[in-house]
Image (cartoon, rainbow, N blue to C red; front, side):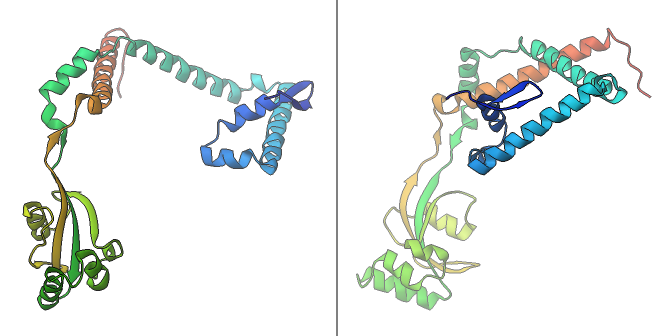
Length: 248
């Protein structure tokens, strides 16, 4: 990319690189507009306006004003404090072995819960449910086509497909049948607060422990945050003995 000069304000060049650097400070969705012709023109005009106001402030010696000096001191204090915090946190580290040890001791915290993938047909009466079940069992219609034809659930458009779900995501009556039903079989009508369901289980996954590779990054982040918090509190408590505090 050529670093063309786009404007010169009181002897100071505003280049293409300056414009691109400014664009990158905006959220991604805003950046799309700022890279258009109109967006670039507007942003360049804002940068020029900023430079003009800066020159005005310098010419009027505003860097000596109480307001400017107070804001500058506040910024310096914030930056210096953050620099000190970063220095304190340098001592907080977590090793790979510590992460592995934590995983091995706390494996039960990293379970993939038992899940079921199922389809269903929902109707408003037991009579309808039994009639549909009879049609499916006699081969008149497939479960999926019956769902599209008869079901009152929005899942009918996908042949009754509810996708994968774990315990606690469905009403108890539905869940109890789904998790105990054999794969490929169709349940008898199941009554819930929504009506009568015919359930067909497509797939089941037993509860399992996530691998170390799956969770090591999150474990490391958690341990590091705990260690940093402990280090921060320990350090500040020590400073309370060094500097005078008056709480009124």
